[in-house]
Image (cartoon, rainbow, N blue to C red):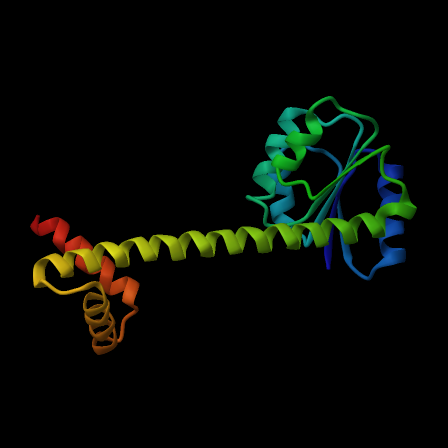
Length: 190
């Protein structure tokens, strides 16, 4: 596992790296300056990012949104105290764990585990949502294609679907792809 730690204080960075290496076998890289954060994080392509900062700014969270690109890796942010409405902004930027009261070495492993678990859960939900949206769009196209066939050939819905399915099998294509081609062709002819 590759971990990137964003920590400006050198002594704290050393303590964090030591704590991480004590709890898990991994490669740890420290970024000591948060300017151009997205580029620096991307250069290491980490499995998780730990950010320890006293008071996160909106600019830093925008950089983080770019760095999490969007939401391609878990990010745990440790802040020293409540930062107004920035917790919500941090979560929207892709932070998987937002921990107030700073980064304590003995809490690193449980927070990392939680951030990774939450990230995986959110990613699974996003993938399921994308798949559901794709299936719904395909269903809409198939329904439009069936309607075109029913009107053009004077057949019922079951016969229209059977024709789409037979054409798809004959051409070695998926039914939604054949339906899309029919709807597109109809649009060009209409």
